Image (cartoon, rainbow, N blue to C red; front, side, top):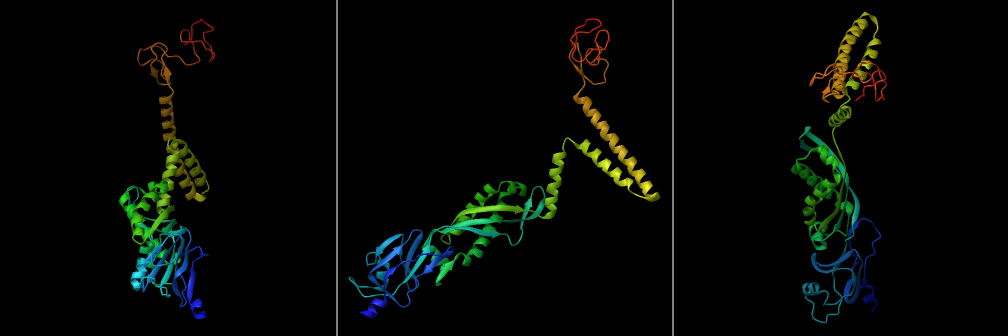
Length: 344
């Protein structure tokens, strides 16, 4: 009786104290299982009985008293007679079905893509993902083998390679600009998740979250992006920018010493003068187009320096001059102080 009590399992359970164990093989240590033993399967666990490496019966969370009715496949594999009471051998595996979060991924090599704005470029990316065991039987068949334990580290490299491959395919199929990807990482992550879900399902896994934290570009592309952004900021203020740069150039040229420096300074000054002249002319023309005078008779718009209306030929007066007698008036005056003419 003493031998029987020490070599038979009366209770089978697994209290997971780790954060990364996916599969745990219950240590039998030469002991056997007998009908009437208690099996406890906690939440986020699945217990699987194997006989000679072949999957038999699967138990979801709950407490069970083992007997032939809830071990039908194992009973059949062992060819046990009805009412069998003697101990028997079997392997018990506990599969953790909780989510394994904050798993890191990154591109070990750049992803080559064809960009409509920058041509063929190489990009890198990194982020995190979460997964869980969705089908314990499939997972044991495809990946586990005969190990005593199986952790996230045992599968992380394989999952990373699948993720990077799927993201590369998603980039190629999307045919969108790299800038659009970088500005819409959340939406792109959802598309990549749908693409890689099938590969995970084939392993009995489910990807619950994929986060693309960053898409980085080569240094040359980043400089081109910065230059384009700067030009966008300066749009509409190019004349001011030219003046500012010209003034800086004059100051730098003035620092040159010697006759050669004088010649260079004079040449630079003449060239800069032409640039400033063109810039001022452009500014003046733009000002004349936006300001200008309105005819008091017909209301037509004329150039700021026009003396007669181009539509009706009426004489145009300045803002501080009376239309009738030409006397000077204050800006807010409503009637001419000389002739009493109503000012329009």
